[in-house]
Length: 83
Image (cartoon, rainbow, N blue to C red; front, side, top):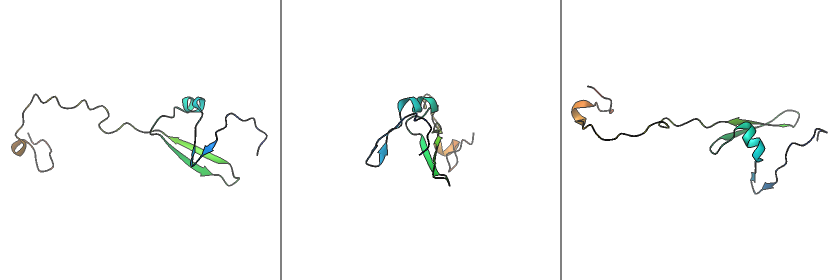
């Protein structure tokens, strides 16, 4: 081990280890984000945070249903609007 000061420690429980709160805040780690682990040639561990992107429909508010459509006349077989 190196003589560098320790920023934080976590204890492994089963197959899991907690990420200290101040590190989660500093790196903006949130539920659903992924951690990519890589062991360097010198034995050090590198962890990359992969932020979860918002979903395709993340900003979709839904259809309020005010407009009726005739599906077979206004859409093709793939559901694309043909009008």
